[in-house]
Length: 264
Ligand code: KIV
Image 1 (cartoon, helix red, strand yellow):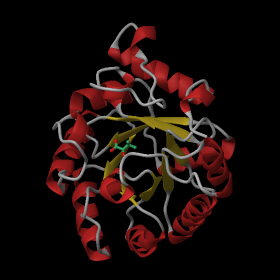
Image 2 (tube, helix red, strand yellow; image 1 turned 120 degrees about the vertical axis):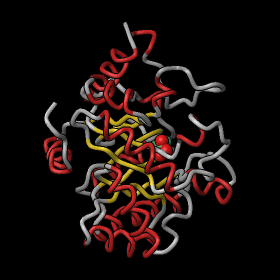
Image 3 (cartoon, rainbow, N blue to C red; image 1 turned 180 degrees about the horizontal axis):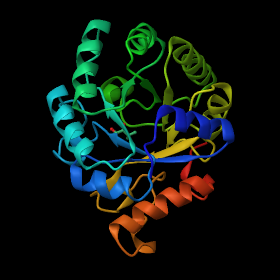
């Protein structure tokens, strides 16, 4: 796979072609994921839960994110690498610039941060300084205590309109991508059609430009209840890398996610 860039992924959106994103946190899995033709690797702060066994993403630090981002960058074979800015590492624009610099220097190609239009100034400052930003809307796990749990967001008219407005404002501020987590499928569709930048979904139905899953979930090795937006690809696959390849193919063909993986 030749190197995937922002330009590649924006062109995919313009052409109506979907792309696949998977989390990875180390060099070996980054090698397997990227050589299975997955276009983007997310070094998610979900590592707090799936690697460290924490009960939320809140304890994850910039230093830990940098360590895992650098490991992923060493194994990567041409995928675009997105790294999460962890909890409270972008509470002010100045702090965001310092934290983003650490992750970009560790090997990220784009950083992701969670929140709505309060982040517009931060997004502009980062973008002007050459740091591409993905804005994460909907269920923002770093705000789990404020949200009162891991719940679908944007179900009522007011919050749906607010999310659509936030998406447009963040795009205007210079965001290069959006990620929608646990959002009704119809709202995700509307947001995707109303912005020019690629929209990645998780629990956001079949109409976004791209899809992301946590690797441990799609390999069926996460303990506990499986969320409805997850599909375990291992039963159809010959190997772990084959599961990654199948996931990529099914996302690009529109087979996954299906309606049944979305929320009303
Ligand atoms: O941290 C992560 O893995 C994420 C995904 C759940 C989108 O942000």
